[in-house]
Image (cartoon, rainbow, N blue to C red; front, side, top):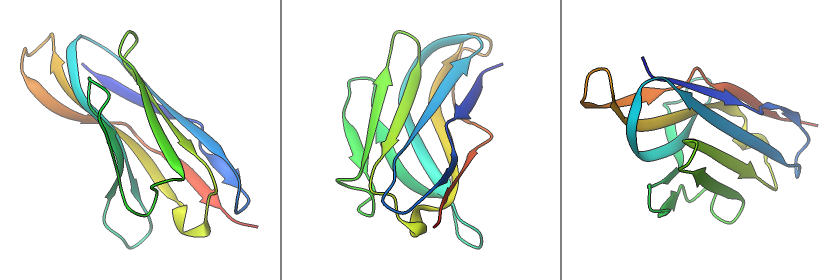
Length: 121
């Protein structure tokens, strides 16, 4: 069973900084794209940023220039550095990964449980 666990959420003032991390565990053969998504109350889950195994990144327009996604392929983790946070960044942030599981030997998409980020004065 593959698991993704997020950490690093919390309460921060507008203009502040947070760093989210996502750790993986389980029987993992390979991981393709990893990413961060977020969901605010009453809204659909939306893409924040993704990163391929080769390091190619993609960002939502709303976070470009403020957020940075990074990845460590040796330990299958990703981070999200969030600068200049705004109240509209308030959401539950979810880690996502496309994983080739050693158990099933097939590619599946996995999600973490989410971590709350609240931007408020």
